[in-house]
Amino acid sequence: MAEIFAMTFPMFGIILLGFVAGKSRAIPVDGLAWLNIFVIYIALPSLFFQLLSQTPIEKIASWEFILATTSATYIVFALSFAIGAIASKGNILESAIQGFAGSYGNIGFMGPGIAIAAFGPKAAVPVALIFCFENAMHFTIAPLLAALSSDKGENLAMLLFNVAKKILTHPFIIATIAGITAAAFQYTPPLPVDKLLTSLTGAAAPCALFAMGVSIAVRPTGRIPAVIPALLSMKLVVHPIVVYFVISWVGDFDKIWVYSAILLASLPTATNVFVIAQQNNAWIERASSMILFSTGLSVFTVTALLYMISNGMIPADFFPPN
Picture 1 (cartoon, rainbow, N blue to C red):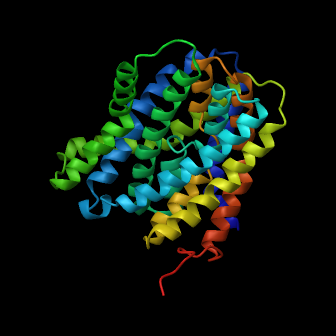
Picture 2: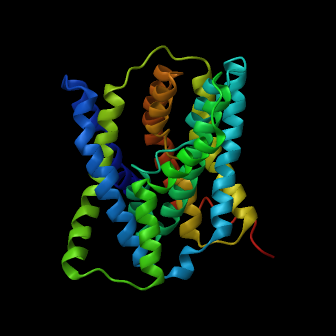
């Protein structure tokens, strides 16, 4: 257990440092802008590109894995949406945000660092694939449900164009496509460029986690509604369980891929859920509360999950082939 705690403590410790810094200094959230730009547009894309470009292309093209993980997350979204619909008495927009709160994990800021620390560089490929396709799903669902709940008549063609543009221009997805292309053509960047990428990848996880901690600290939090415990259970407990069963049922995957998928599903609610709530002016303070409490509780749930994995308490395939 000490080894697991030693692995997770630096991750959550950096988040805590960011949280304390955010609480102790009266600096507006706009002060995070350049750090977020560095993390989102430079450091994490460099990490995805470098790790994917060094991976044999045959290991990347795993559509069964993509289908399994994305479908499992959608199932959890649908369940969380149903919980939100009951709590909000049928409000589609609030239900959608609660659906994201229960299923949209912090796989961008936390995912690469914690998965690679736990399982090594081989975890980079499943992390990148999960990130790309699950974010594509979230980027599609959010505006479609927002348009559905709006009284304004939305131009469907323009809506779909904007959704596709948002997906294809996201820096993580661009970096992933570039990394896969480099792997396909066995392209190796010149040595100076490769060293620059290595330096940037080393900064990716610490900067992302610190920015996440500050973001949580400066977001407003209101009263805690009764639906929050149910959504916390969906995100931290039900989501990894559903991913585990679905991925075991769909195919026989490498154990690093299986455990990476379960780990990413166990991560707390993404800070992007607050952004979605702000953009749509709905469930804003409660989204912030969900991020805060899920992050705090994940210190224990993620540590427990890694302990069970490291001690062989979770087999790599729940439905092993005969």
